Length: 380
Ligand SMILES: *Cc1c(COP(=O)(O)O)cnc(C)c1O
Image (cartoon, rainbow, N blue to C red; front, top):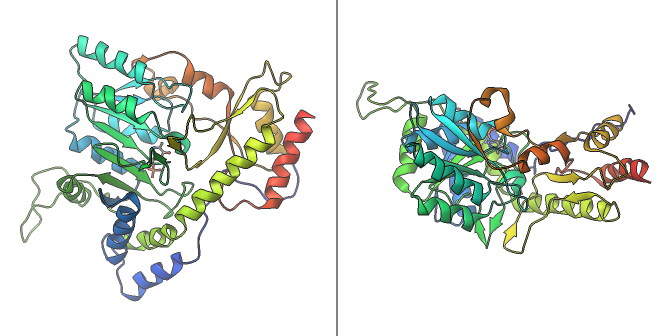
């Protein structure tokens, strides 16, 4: 291994104003899970998403997905459909509620939930007298899923869609922002996401009452009373005013950082143009606008002179550059081994042959030069 600094997949990238908002929180003693930064960050997100939706800031994206399921009435032994090709944050909340995930395969254009396999799953569960309570669809790596096709199927069977937009802030489909398609949507501001608050998330919904209910549930579900009175189970899931300050600063650079991530994707397109057997994930048409949170490649070893995904990953590792296999599908994870799965082997093949590459908005020309050198040495 060389002595050069590590190049990360996606590391936090501050714009410069974040500290000012955090300092304001200290100066005014708003060190609490409420305060002007929380309200301000919610307003900023709301404006960014087009003001048609309400936003409730929470402690994580996983918390947002958990509360979304709670609000759709998911409970013990209910079934919830979930895209299999995703991070466990999408599917674990189903287990928190004692419900059962039903996993669905991806399609090959966006790598997200396949509308055909989705319908097959719904029909079969209904036949088994277990109509799914919700569908969790994911805009993975910032690439919008097939919005119209997926929502058309969901509507036909009258099943609400929870949109996991944890990786997709700044992405859009036909000009409409990711996070505004579902009955409820989740955003994440974890350390490696497109913007970060160190840790955090948000619920997005077109319904004002659902927003208020989200805040109520996220603050231990306190009924109106001078003492603490609880007639529902609540959670401690609200975002703190300190981290919301970081979020307000990050909103000032969100679009700039989306632009820089998209430039990284262009860099990879150019780099792999001449390499046979490597495909860079791209928008299937002009309807799709990915934030390219992570740039990903798919390797076809039959065409790459037998160079496989793992060899590329190890070559990067040797050069102190982080890369990572694509998400391992949930239906192949030990914790979900008994869950039903519908579809073929699309997600499985993506996991076998796919790799995420350094994609941060803070990568330099020097970093890109090092990345390029690894690929040149391997393929020339
Ligand atoms: C990050 C992520 C989550 C969870 O968000 P946290 O804020 O880390 O809890 C959920 N789904 C996907 C697809 C993610 O990438």
